[in-house]
Image (cartoon, rainbow, N blue to C red; front, side):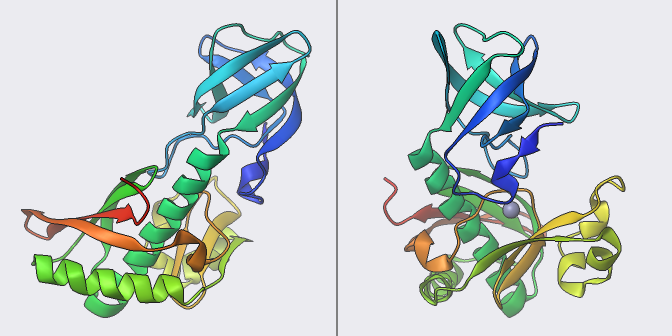
Length: 238
Ligand SMILES: [Zn+2]
């Protein structure tokens, strides 16, 4: 199993590691700072360097539970020591985007009682789907104001690992369908935005909501009954 350093330290940009397997898709390392795509967050990109070579990591994904770095160009051999480095600017933007989405879902549940039914993100932009009966541009502006107020409040964002039985008993986590997580997953990783939102989540987040900066609601869409979509963008995304 690969030690997933990003799970406990989202700010780790680089690490030393050893190649443990080479597959058709790329390489497996004994430890890594590369997040594998999942939960709506894209996989990390970056570089692997070793004594007499280097390769671009074009994507990171999981294949049958194994974390694979998808490489362009030469592949290092099994047993080789590598330095793994993520594209930090892209990842940090994804961390800000991901935390913004969790804050959004916390506000929409708290103030309008609507659950999230889906979501996806790219660096600086994201969409989230809600079980809302109606949605209007005015609603979007109202939510945008609340979202920016909550982000500016500089709420701490904490990572913890809860025994599965505790997670299943937590009403805040039940609303985000923690019971749908495969039974083999124990403990369950939880992202807690202090006083605003708590979700079982594997993604990478900033330490505090102020680090997200300003966010705008770019679009509100009616996709059907109880299926309304909001698109958000980070203030500095273009
Ligand atoms: Zn998430």
